[in-house]
Every structure is written in structure tokens, then in C-alpha cells.
Image (cartoon, rainbow, N blue to C red; front, side, top):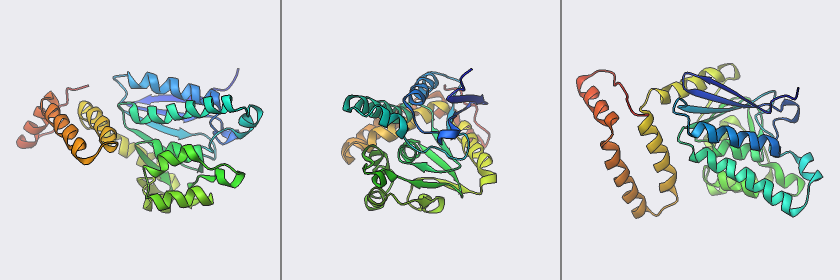
Length: 259
């Protein structure tokens, strides 16, 4: 029986997807990308799923694309299809209504670093390292550049892209690539703490807020405020908003209804 490329576990609203190619450092083969896409498409319409955690089995988080597979199929048409497939996955991560957290325990390189940058949040072990190292083999990491440049300062992102040098987890946090850095033995606890904090909030408000966040980023300031104003007004009509305000004034815990 072939080994599953992507493992799925659900617990109390938190769905963990674990890339399961440890011997290949969880490189993103076209088969793994396809399973990833299928899993996220299903999660997007699952009312029980509140938070998604992306993890990697073995020593690495994700070493990027499967270079052996790419060399065996190096025609332009194949390569275009592969990168479109990967780009669709990255945009799906931002499009699903649930917040997505990267759990980074080991190296995240090239498209693996892109994956971290594409997630809404990221928690890293202090032993994790990050690089967009394609330049070292003659490939500028063009697709990872899209996600990196939207998470980090331009000059910091460009330095990583041009040098291929690794940065450690502390530097990744300083540059805005990850949110939290903890000792490796506390990684799971910290991811759970972050996920539980989100699960304790109104699901309807979280869905609305994530959608607004990414839409307004691509707009000018005036258009962004117009969208935010309309979104805020709609949010105020939610049953959960009324409950939350009433609970705050009564100094009690809210009982969320929205899904």
C-alpha cells in the first residue's frame, strides 16, 4: 500500500494537514500539490473546521518543489502547468475562510518558504531555518517572491531572493515572515494556544475579517476604507456582534451563534 502524501487530523475545530514525504523533505511533487488542493477545497466548505494547521513530517517542513520530478519533465508546458498548480494552492490558502497556521519545525526553502509566507500565520521552532535558495542552482525564485514581498520589507525579501542565504527563525520573525518563535519542545503547545485563541472567537467574524483583510490589501486607501466601512456595517448586523457587545457590557462570556 502506498503511503499517504498528506495526512489529515481534526480535533475540536482544528484541522491539521501534514505533508508526508519525509525522505524527500516534503518537497511539493505534483501529486502532493493535488492532494493539498483537494484537502483545502474540502475544508473551505466544512462548517466544523475553524482553523487549519499546515505541518511537515520528518526533519524538514518543506524543501520546495520536487527538483527530480521537474528535471524528468522539464518541458515549458509541464513547468507552466506545475507552477500554475502551485500558485493556485497558495492563493487557495488565503481564500479559504479559515485562518491557516504554518507549523514550522525544520527548514523551509524555496516553495516551502513560499508556503510559510502564504499562510495567514506562522509559528516556528527556534531551530527552523528559511531560504529562497533557487538562485543557487540558477533559478530566481520568482513565484516565492510574490508571497515574500507581501510579507516582508522589499529590500529584505530581495536580499533573500538574490543571495539564497538562510535566515534563522529569530531573523524570520524580525522580518515578518513568522509570528512566533519558541523552543522546539514547545512548538505544538504554542500552535495549539494560537489555534485555540482563534477558535474561541466568532466564526462568522473571523471568516468576514479574513476575506476583508486580503481584499483591501490590493486596493488603494480610499477604496480600502470604502470596503472596510461596508464590511464593518455588515458585521454589526451579525447576531454574534450583538451577542458580543451585550456580553461585554454584562461582563460575561459571549455565546457565539454564527457559523
